[in-house]
Each structure stands twice: as C-alpha cells, then as structure tokens.
Image (cartoon, rainbow, N blue to C red; front, side):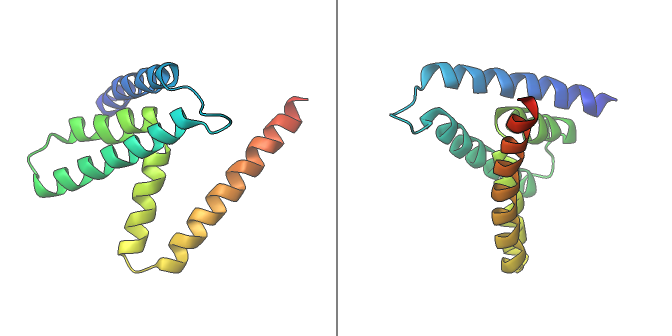
Length: 120
C-alpha cells in the first residue's frame, strides 16, 4: 500500500506539471508543441532517473517508484514507452522494438478513433 501512496503522490505532481506546461505552451499552428515538449522532457527525465538509479544503488526504492512511475507517468506515459523501447533495443531485439513502436502508435490511434466512434 505504501508503494501506491508514493505512485499517487508522484502522479499528482506529474499531472499538475503536465497541466501547467499545457497552459504555458500553446499550439504552433496545428502542431501540438506542448505535448511534444512534454514527451521529450518526460523521456529525458525517465532516462536520467533510470541511469542515475543504476549508477547509485542507494536511491530509496520508494522515491525511485515515485519519480519513474508517479511523476514521469503522470507527466507523460510516452516517457515509459520510450524507456521500454530503448531497453528492448539494447537487449538486441531490434525487430521487437520496431514492432512495439509501430504497433503502439497504430493501435493507440485506432483506439482513440474507436473511443470517439463509441461516444457518438
């Protein structure tokens, strides 16, 4: 239960940060610059946290969970997707990584469409 509390607090922080970035960064024409910036920042953050925690094993596991799953997850799930993709690539499974990227994008765009159609 304590893990859930840390993830929840982190998720709150990440979600609020995501909301604030959306208020600050406006669309550049039809390009969603806020979402783009959040995805890049979140991917950088989770990459930094993952590498730092591998190098410094004394990092509290609760704080690591709060930072990676909570804050980064609340800020953008794209950061987790990016870290997982890189992990697959580094394990030598390039084909699996490409499949994961393509399947995720196609399936998620299709799911948004299906959700919109279902709501009508």
